[in-house]
Amino acid sequence: MKQILWFRRDLRVEDSAILAHAKEEVLPIFIFDKHILKQLPKEDKRITFIYQCVLELKKRLQALKLDLAIFFDEPQNVFKKLKEMGFDEVLCSVDFDAYAKQRDEEIEKIIPLKRYIDAFILNPALHLKKDQTPYKVFTPFYKSLSMISQSKHIDEYKRNENLKKIKFDYSTIPSLAQLGFQKQILPHFLTLNGFELLDAFQTKMSSYEKNRDYFNKDASSKLSVHLRFGLISPKQLFNCIRLSPNNRGEFFIKELFWREFYNYILFHFPKSQESNFNGLKISWNDSEEDFKRWCEGKTGVPIVDAAMIHLNQTGLMHNRLRMVVASFLTKNLFINWKKGEAYFAQKLLDYEASSNIGSWQWCASTGADAAPYFRIFNPYNQSKKFDKEGVFIKSVIKEFEHIDDRVFHIENGVQSNVFITYPKAMVDIKLSRQRAIERFKEAKNELF
Ligand SMILES: Cc1cc2nc3c(=O)[nH]c(=O)nc-3n(C[C@H](O)[C@H](O)[C@H](O)COP(=O)(O)OP(=O)(O)OC[C@H]3O[C@@H](n4cnc5c(N)ncnc54)[C@H](O)[C@@H]3O)c2cc1C
Image (cartoon, rainbow, N blue to C red; front, side, top):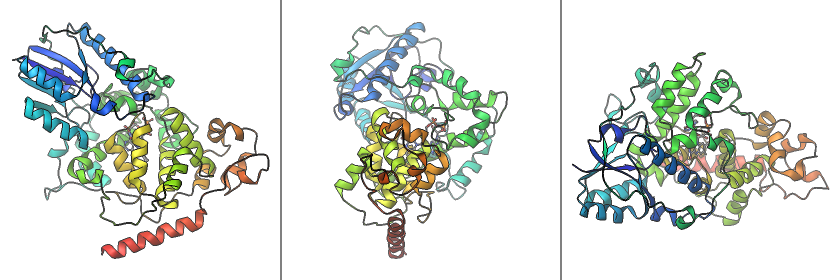
């Protein structure tokens, strides 16, 4: 039996489903998928990061007397060739987003594909309510999982130590330039591995719940990118948190289960990738000009603009800022969440379809377990509460460095400074809030 181990979003050798389930003769591979890469700009930071991770994975497999064959092609072509060469089956981890599902269906027509739950703790197919329907609300979902979430340890996959590498040309490694990308400077934390990040986070764990909402406090784990590409598994993360001496990881564990929840929702309700989960029919504002100003950080609202400029420059955005800019787009500008979701998908280093779609639908009040439509973030109050001295805003918008921070938290406050050129706020916060509430009421009445 000649097996192909297809690494995709599980770029590690520990707690690896495919290395555990493989038998004897294997060909580990990674494919830089031409179909995906051709849609990305050559400055995409994620490709620089994945490229490094793939080379690191190759080294780690070599240390186990295995190796990694690296392809730059469309997966269909790769598997057609490998099938002709006498390979029997492919082992890989499950991916539930629309493109991945369709791609895997195509591959299955070429060669048998065995998929394992690896990027998430829970197998969504196996967890249902008593009436055999899926959960739609986070709290009961989380409570129903207490056997897992309250446990001290979740079993990890044990590698099959008897694997032998199949003779193959493992020497061809396309360069980043051959893939069509320019090497990008990455934020420092991406030079650390998942366990190093976790170590650094241990000291912050006890104040995580209190501090995590402050934009300028380095209070969260920064593990989302590593989780996204499987550099650390959620089970490994869970087990390490449970071992931490102060054992105050409850709140953090709950956040990890939000990630599970959104994956669960996308699995059971794949249409939520495309349409409002709650079925509301909303006449969104289609203005491309309004959307462009939001993307570019030119709304005239300092906290929204700083967050968007920071995202454009770094691929990063703090969780609460994601909520603030998403609320501003979907409620104050009344623009469809799908546009914001697609923009984040292009920019976020930690882009994960399920969390992104679920969180956007939450912010837009169209989701499974969403914010009520009348609870709309006031961006000025948010910056006053979580960035009182304007440290974050000033760190991003250098022109604001010397101005009185109080003006950031007042509508058109910065604009009152005659020495600063800054666009007038696109919308009146109170009026736009009222408009959103009325439109949601209309949509709800039409629904019932
Ligand atoms: C509009 C919007 C879009 C988002 N898009 C993504 C996305 O594409 N990818 C992504 O990983 N997260 C997304 N999130 C969730 C959250 O913002 C990030 O997971 C978090 O900011 C990552 O930073 P961290 O690793 O330091 O998080 P921590 O606070 O340290 O949390 C630990 C881990 O728990 C998970 N987590 C935490 N909060 C959430 C949440 N609300 N939903 C789901 N998982 C969570 C993440 O995997 C995170 O790495 C989005 C949130 C919003 C409001």
